[in-house]
Amino acid sequence: MSVPEHVLVIGAGLAGLRTVQGLRRAGYEGRLSLVGAEEHLPYDRPPLSKQYLAGEWDRSRIELASEDDLEELGVRTHLGRAAVALRPGEVELDDGATLHADAIVLAVGVTSRTLDGQPGSIHVLRSVDESDGLRDALADASSLLVVGAGFVGAEVASTAVDRGLAVTVVETAPVPMERLLGERGGTLVARLMTDAGIDLRTGVSVASLTATGAELSDGSTVSADETVVGIGGRLDLGWLEGSGPDLSGGIPCDERGRVEGLDGVWAVGDAAAWTDPRTGDRARLEHWTSAAEQAAAVAADIAGGDPPPATVPFFWSDQFGLKIQLIGRPGAADEVLTLHGDGLDGGAVKGTVLGYLRGDTLVAVAGFGAARLIARYRRPLSDGVDRAALLKFRDTLS
Ligand SMILES: Cc1cc2nc3c(=O)[nH]c(=O)nc-3n(C[C@H](O)[C@H](O)[C@H](O)COP(=O)(O)OP(=O)(O)OC[C@H]3O[C@@H](n4cnc5c(N)ncnc54)[C@H](O)[C@@H]3O)c2cc1C
Image (cartoon, rainbow, N blue to C red; front, side):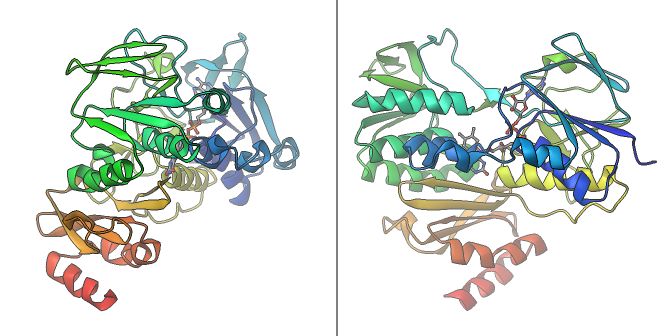
């Protein structure tokens, strides 16, 4: 593949920005364009449910690049413009303009899922504008209902409790954050929530939602001044329909981010389903670190270099005074065991580290306020150690 003359990146979030930065770092000297549906310059999303929502960080701290930075990189920006069609070698924007390029990178992320018939006054949280709106609303509220106890819901609940609000969390699964941490890991998050005074209602769903509360599937009701729905991300790829690939599980990519069946097109970040070189499985990871790493790999690939070696997925969440960290792919596990701490036996959650095994092989490690220990498990995890080697390694750390 020859080095392209013009690289067009669609989506000006983390993955899009890191792609253009990575291209210049890799020595790419051709034309670069960045299209973003939001009016804003690229900004960071994790603080939107944490320090920024809490009012501890101002806007400048979440900016990922200034206009000067992008000018210095020689990037032509089209902000406030959405891509509406992809054809071979070109992308059409919502103002009717068509941009031609010999390499196109799709970095479009996901949008918030909502409940059927969700009233417009109910908050969701994906963008800085939504975080601003929620922060202002919380300032005048004394109670909050959080629908969905994924990481965004859990972090919003934690921030709201810190601000003195009475918080109710409703979750359909038996425990919070089950999708990321599994049922046993989720029980520890449930403990963090109830210890913080949250009214946690699991195993129930919302039957109806109004501006002042909800009726739940078990017949109970919750009233609240404000409500946030945090039930995960939704792919918004309608504009790519008809371009070729099956987009139901995300934009399908090989292990270098090249989109299946579309020459000269790559995909990175939350919307991209990359192939895991170890297992051959395809998965989307809505993790900050994966978005940044995929962008670096695609930039190297386009610039004609060797992509950096694949790393194990990493995710973190800050809530209830703890940093929860997860490395690996816990979804593949069929067994969870305690490696450190006694949170699962009713002891302190802080310091607990869980190992996730598939058969006899370590596939993930999760830590709750145990950053030093988690860092030590990266190597055994990428080596895919077996149970005996894992326990032997664990004993060297105790
Ligand atoms: C509140 C919140 C907290 C988070 N906290 C954590 C955390 O603690 N740890 C962690 O690992 N991850 C966290 N994440 C996830 C992390 O932020 C994402 O994985 C990361 O932002 C993904 O980057 P991205 O570039 O793929 O998508 P995004 O950052 O969503 O950027 C995609 C951009 O593309 C634009 N776009 C979409 N469609 C089009 C189109 N057709 N044309 C032009 N532009 C388009 C969108 O408007 C958006 O600006 C959090 C996410 C949120 C929302």
